[in-house]
Length: 126
Image (cartoon, rainbow, N blue to C red; front, side, top):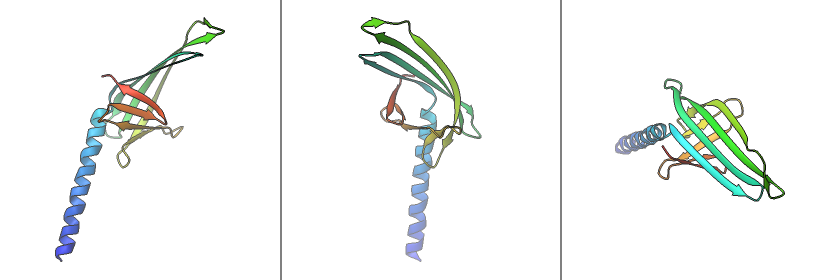
């Protein structure tokens, strides 16, 4: 009987820790994230803006603004721009944002202020 009570207590503590981490991730998610890369073919600027769209369903709106300054034979070409608006649902079990159409995931390291889309890393600036 003592072991059963101890197991219930441990399960309660673990569940409350997971809930705390889920809340911390959800508070961290809204904001602006940036990524910059430069290589021999050009320069890329990538910005993600995440905002809570529906608290009940855990839906987040994502606006991605992208600028690519291509270099061809050492000469800069006029930049390309792209703006895409999507939404993703928060998965509280895994602490991820998942796009329903493509199943692309966003994961977070809120201690370091990072968002990951696969191996692509974005830094939170606000």
